[in-house]
Length: 209
Length: 209
Image (cartoon, rainbow over all chains, first blue to last red; front, side):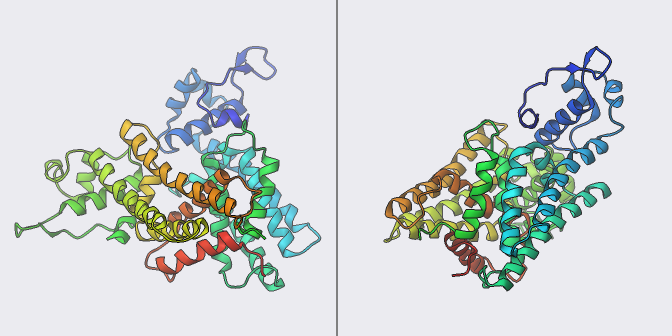
């Protein structure tokens, strides 16, 4: 499902839930809309253009969703909930700040690999509306958590103190976020394997020991 | 100049070269066009919209440039020439592959900080035209150089061999490229200082020694 959201393929209509006739379900409409938003830009994609892509009438889309904004909220919610799940996992960990930091770095890598379409939409928001600004604020809360863990790990003495925690947080998330630009879920590198590489690179760096 | 290219401020007209009347020079037109492209998207920005932003007629713009594409080529050329200058510096270095790798990481960080507008335009290209594809190929050559150095440094035994060089190259450039999203040239962190932080983070990682 995630994979189709990042490709240009036209999704095959699925059986319309419970009515026994072929058509698009709400999930299909959202998934394909996210693909369109990521390809053409959220502002530039109209509900009419979306109907054309789906090969249905505009009213058929409004049967599933009330507005473009509703699609945006639902899609970015999925990405944010997955990222917040990672933060929750880190918070509940019995361990050090370094352990929590590793969970957030590895977990967010996995979330990006598993939901490239939804996360790309989240990352490309420009804050042109109130709703977009609210979504971006929720995204920043995840970054702030990462920065907190860096600072705590510095206080624990296990992370070097010479780098500014805020700067480190932005660079690390910048690196992780860039994965959506090229990662292919059908490639050799699984989300699980990738989620072990990023914490190792961030903590140990490139130097051979 | 670079700074104004990333802000929304309307540039004050400068004295038109050699004619003694106030107006926009070619450099101003390109700089402001890049800002518009980065704000609204290259495809979405028409020469008419650009004229409106400048407060001049369309023919006044065509006095300086023949097309939107000419602006794109000239602006991305500046970014690519600066990045190629860094690669050249690394190539001419009498040292190890690790040294060359450090020069490319630090140097490209500095180039991004000094030219955020031009580099942002370069990074956001989608390859919708032949010209865009050519520019993107030149950008990839810089990434390939970084990957070569990672591989050579692995052969030298100074970079850990357990990470795929191609993956490392993409992650490192992903991190550096993300800087354009938030870096402000008028902030406390100078391009020079920043260019020493990224190689240190990449080589040593976060761990306290």
